[in-house]
Length: 317
Ligand code: PMV
Image 1 (cartoon, protein in one colour):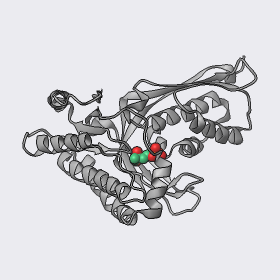
Image 2 (cartoon, rainbow, N blue to C red):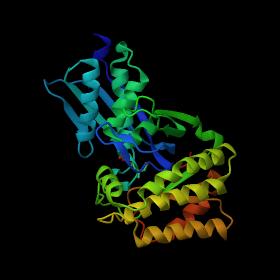
Image 3 (tube, rainbow, N blue to C red):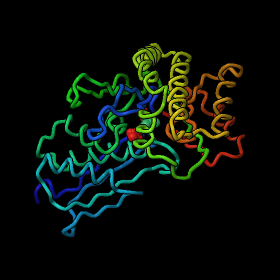
């Protein structure tokens, strides 16, 4: 039995951007317009398994549409030249519809599992990053633990774009609560919504103009463990992204009245309640709250009072 006949398993955490990726400079290569900065979670993750298929075709056991994973596999096969039919199983340990970045963690775990499956080929890590990026841009940040910077370079082909961990999560440990406002499928996919924003929003370039300063502040905030500075920059950056979406034509509106209520509660807890916490929201209505682990129970009790919430997912850190 050769090594490649073995089953390869890899795991990757979901990641939440503190400075968001919203727009592509090259849609085909899936290259971001600007850099982004995120925290990879540890308790909400995806696991991918790759083994040889018992049939003469690929077998997919994935939640939802396998098209992103198929794109990733095509890129990996082009690189290795190995077209052996595979059995691919990808699972998330959290509900896919919860508005967490399930495609990010699932595509990162799949790219890592393929690298392990072909471990005899010494596949460079940059290549694994490229496979993951082609399937889901933000998945490249899930290839690392902790606070991760996905930095754009100067070249048009993305060859000097980099992704790396700047700090382990333990350096500035924050717990995360995801308040599930709505668990129905999203109205817009992020690629489509980014394109609408790029073509039509009067605020699109202003959002990107602010990124270098947002990044500098967010990285400085983590480095100095300054939750209030991180709160200011992460909330502003996220609200600016939603303003870009909402000023697009057609408007891309993800925030719901309940999302606004939770954001208001977080501001109240921080400014009047003495609880260090802040929110961020991605391409959906669900609000993610960050707070130090010592305050998690207090924030959770406040969120549990909101009877309309569908669910609250927790990653203690
Ligand atoms: O990687 P995508 O195409 O799912 O886009 C992610 C976009 C946001 O989640 C809204 C922001 C981000 O940086 O994660």
